[in-house]
Image (cartoon, rainbow, N blue to C red; front, side):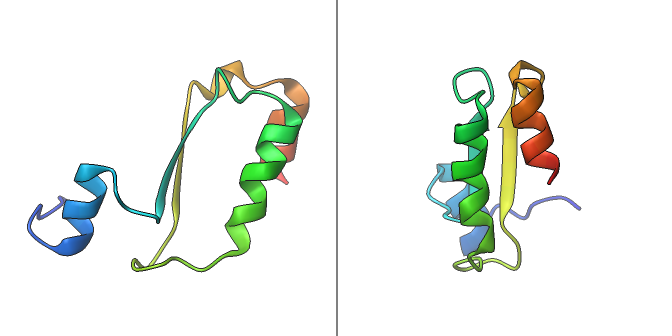
Length: 72
């Protein structure tokens, strides 16, 4: 599915202002406590979109324990 880049949701995501899209840097937030803190926000409903999206950049940098906590 291609983004339209004209609706409010596409504009918010493109500008980085969307509360429903979260990007996590796996290299600097690689511990189990960091993942647990991010997982706590999963229970909240999306603010304007249909879904919440979590992007984890450099997921290979997570510790083994943090990756296991992410899977739970």
